[in-house]
Image 1: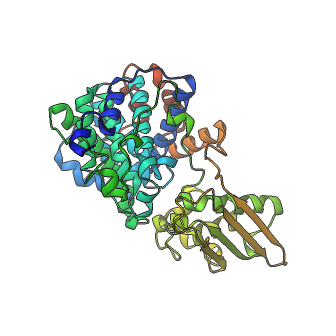
Image 2: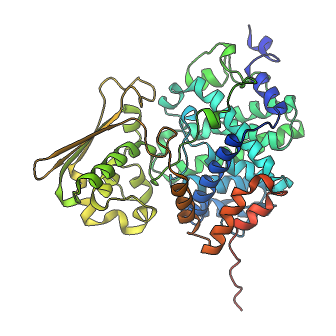
Image 3: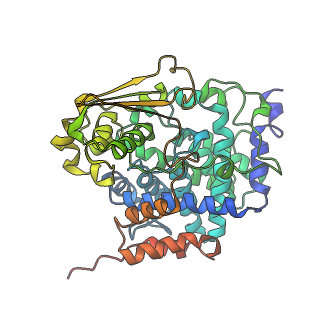
Length: 468
């Protein structure tokens, strides 16, 4: 079937029709999973709100006008695309946001900023936000599983590239777009898909999430206004799968979920981070922290730490001698030394001069990281090639652990108490304790809120007093 003939019956049309018409028949499990995902990402947005990168992004767009959408964690108001841009950067700047397996990236850091900004601008309900979040995530899963792992392995930052497609559909769902408009929104989003992993460790990397969120809002708004795109944007010559992944899937490779099929948010699930670092470090950190607790060693007792991991993970950890907090988040040497030295990994460990502490730096030369032979072309490699950690102590003992499931993933989930504690810690960066509790309750009650503004109000700090 030609690209032109595929038009009204191909994967873009199928996904668009489903996204426009799918009923809101969500199980309690799906709804709670969506609220958990939103709580996690809203927490990290609050924690990142005052970081230099989102503040610089906000300064860059401030002159282009105020609007109805909030820059979360501040009293600023912008138009929806710019608020989504700033909030997306805040969501991703600490690398504390969730990961999503089919995306090979960070789903909520794109989807939530886009949907929340659009929802506040047009006065949507909390139930509308949950619905848009579930549908947008499903689109990310449906497209991501076809183009990955090749897409990610080629160097694309899937958070930005596949993320903008899900954000466009999530915003389109919120705006009640019909099937034709949904198709246009998806097609327009393909034209905005960009972002390379060369930015890992640089401020631009966190901006990718914001750019994708902004693109999702714009794509949906333009489609609603009548801006059209090609009928088939995903499969075929010059379409997304071939251009961005070098794969030519059959037109039948991308289908929306069937009537008895579970949504991705339930069947696959989001992975939440217990540490504010690149996910590629987490299996090693889990091992070091567990072995330290079990065997009681300290940093000075460590003679060597060697970690063997899939190549796709090792490539992300490019900073052997990090000079900034962002680089430190992408450094196996720093994060493993940190875990061995103090038995925890926290937000404060990546702030200011903390990354230069001599007791941590002293351990870093004793750490080696290697990729599994043969894992270079093995997709994500996380099941065929586990992460193996070996700690050699100065007294001659050797401690070893092999891990496939990282803490916080669906295979080894964080407890409700751990998730709540993470939100409290993150939100407490900008909100007083009483308001943190109010914000947590507003998120938990999201499905019953008549206007998303009720949630945003709980996330907004009191204005600074005016000086006379």
